[in-house]
Amino acid sequence: MDRRTLVKYLGTVSAAGALAGCINAEETDSGNGDDGNGDENGSGSDDGNGSDDGDGNGNGDRSETDSEWETLEPEEGVTGSATLWHDRESAEQELLAEIVDEFNEQYEPTISLNQVADIDDRTRTAIPAGEGPEGFEWAHDWAGTYWEEGLLSDQSDNLRVDMETFTGDAPNAVEWEGNVVGLPHAAETTSLIYNAELVDEPPETFEELEAIMEEHHDPDDGMYGFTFPIDPYFYSGYAHAYGGFYYDEEADELGLSNEETVRGLEFIIDELYPYMPRDYGYEAQANTFQSGNAPFTINGPWAVGNLEFEYGIAPQPSPPEGEPEPYTGISNIYFASAMDDDEERAAAFRSFVEWFVTDVDVQRRQADELGYIPVHAALADGDETGDDVSGFMADIERGRAMPQGPKMDPVWTPLEEEFEEALNDNKSVQEAMEDAEERIRDNWD
View 1 (cartoon, helix red, strand yellow):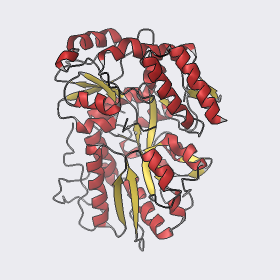
View 2 (spheres, helix red, strand yellow):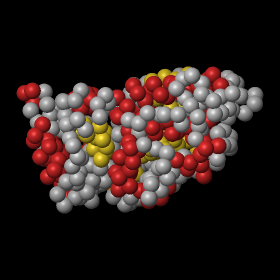
View 3 (spheres, one colour):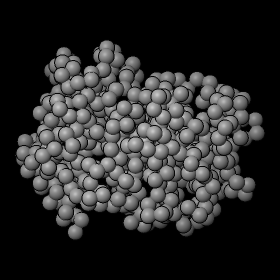
View 4 (cartoon, helix red, strand yellow):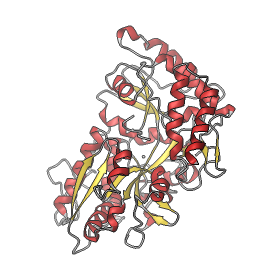
């Protein structure tokens, strides 16, 4: 499932507690599955180690918190080059490129960065052919499938990082059957993002949401009441809102056709879709909101860096008698199986990833500039992260971790395609979900 091209913890409640309670990449819920960066976002250096001096690139003094945590720098003698693939959007891509450039300037190893569309398909074809990267960035739900397909490398014997660096269950997100197949750097989910130039206060209930949608919806004038990518990851909150689920990994059970899931999906069709652009793909929905032609969207941290107007982030409004429970995930940098073939390149890539995930300043910059939700323990209390992070936290707390095992991967496409059949009034939701389950079971067999 391509969440981005369709498409990672708090003040009074710490992030560690929040994620320990709701993001468990190994033991999922039984039903499932802009602030400037200021002068704290520095990576200036006087000796290549990232000290207090600014470097002329907008990076200033580092926080005292940073010095309390060790940044794992490349070991002496590690050279070589390696490649990282990602599918970040423009603002995300720009910051990642800055961070990689800083690493390359300070240390001997060299990392090449490639933005790859359709990263699911590309990794699955390029890596077995020996044409893939040393690693790639994606959420934790690929761990089981990619390991079973031979696309990942276990680096547990080669890592220096202490997994206690990461809060809650983030360490579980990079492990599969005892193998450490990557390192975590951010939590993610989807929330309500609103245009603060059109909406004074975010709605808390569907009745409030509906009133604002009605006020702004005027398709003849290019305005819509709501935007929302019709993709199973994005609409998972409402599919789960009445107790439904896609796939329960612990029970090994599909729940698409049960009454609760069907009710949640019918809510989307009956109450949200009428206010949306007819093209329900990711680009059309995201662009409508980004251009100021809708008051609301449901999207994740990766989307806010592209907004050029004042915005806010709030919990997804509750439907009558329900409460959204969106899927949550951990964004990992995975170790591809190419690392097993060339130790020099593998060491170069490990050195970058360990530096990237342990440098508090790097993680703070991602939070401040992109709204990424850090899983580094230094930032767990939320005191050093901005409004964007706190805005996503309510949905992180009540969300459900995406199942991590290989049986989840065959669920996405039949669910997406059959729901579109119901959306286009070709089938009832009940019929569509029964057909989706039949297709999934056939795929499993």
